[in-house]
Length: 179
Image (cartoon, rainbow, N blue to C red; front, side, top):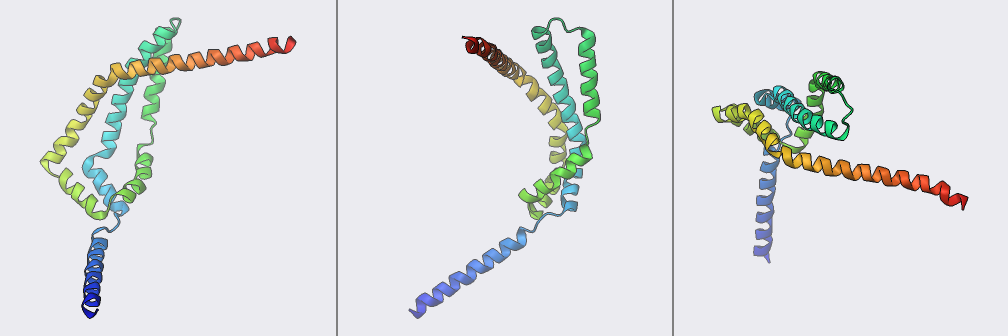
């Protein structure tokens, strides 16, 4: 019995030490830690580049879709839509969006996680990945474009059918009431 009690105390002590050490390594990342990570990763610039790529891809897909579904739309109309989209991207509150992301990073990453990421992204390989990411993203989006266009067309067709069905139901109700 004494031996079992000693074993139990020893196990409890080992577990306590292990959890104590784990707690020490899982310190919360501070706002400054996350901002340093964002800086090393060039997150602000990356966000702008990704948004530019997204807008280019969306522009190409939407022009085609708009012209196909609404042949009466003129090139001037499309130019106005494009200008509004460009202005929307310029007006994006990137700094505010980054501020919104800080607590999310803090929730999911510990200080040691952030320190390790800063260490990696500070290396030549980490910087290469960051430098190549916009091209990888753009090429990936271009590769997905046919699939996305098909999905958008199918979704638009379903929504238009639903709208027509709803309109038919509403117009049929007064006729039914008159009978």
